[in-house]
Length: 194
Image: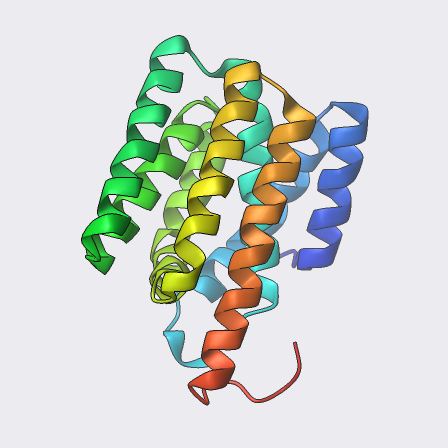
């Protein structure tokens, strides 16, 4: 089985964005993601807070850029509603509801891609992504930033602006990665510098 290193995946994605051709990237993704998908579906015990977000970031960026081309007006309205529901959930302080409404926001983006393989891979990573969301949402100081990031993603998708959408999702995932690493370090679950 081919192993695709997260950095290779990110480099491949960046080339695909530059060329506006995701065919080769999709082939690499299809060939190598089984290894990573199986890795992520194992027990949480050995969370790798550096590699997992790189994979998730690449997939999220692929999804948001593809969604820019395919998103319908109905999906844009549903995305706005999901963003509003997420804001209401944050105000309720119910972490489970927050995570579910955050996931609903992102799932609208995924469904707008019309890419069945990408949807399958993202679905296989759902549990891992949920864990990261829960960890991130535990920090009340991140909530305003999350709302701002969702607004930026929504705005870019509404304009069908791939570059802006890609940038917004990269910022969104990188902020999550930093917060999660900090939380895990504070809880003593990781000790090395990442």
